[in-house]
Length: 227
Image 1 (tube, helix red, strand yellow):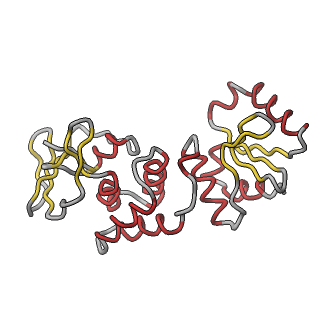
Image 2 (cartoon, helix red, strand yellow):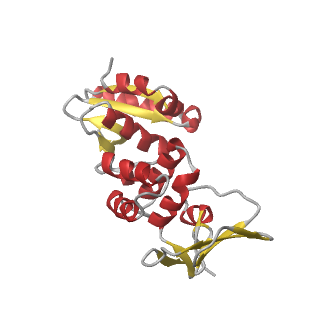
Image 3 (tube, helix red, strand yellow):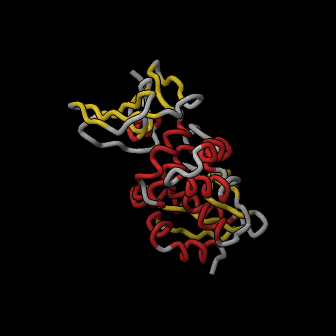
């Protein structure tokens, strides 16, 4: 019995599939299965069963388990998530190498008219060139989106400058922005050392807490322009 977006397919479906692929946390006291066919969803003990007539070409195997493709998982998740959570799932799916923006767009277009598919397609078009695969965290991926939307020139991402890896950097302006996650305070000494190396190399360095990326993106943009 396959797992999908919510669970399994061949049985194949979606939220649990997102957990299998690693880009969406599915914390429910049941599994979700999708079977070919028509009809509404039905709960059978610890299994929630969906039916779909549009599984052709959108199933695969993961560790020997039949499952909907990661792209289809995103489409199946889209009706149940707000834009913020769907955006995070989209970024993580690309960062983890499960999908590409192009493959998400193709799948979203096949499901045009389904709730949430247009939003997903919009992400794939708008952020097609963002190098999520080079990011180390969702905060970095979201930071690249914020900078893109603000019209900032595309930066280098997690590239080595003066022998040290910098989160986001513009060589022409000799400017670096570091996105500090919750672990920053545990490694403050090491981060200060790296910043000193960059400054000696002629770079300006600005630090932005990861929560600012989500809650006050204007501060990130100001840091990018060194204002």
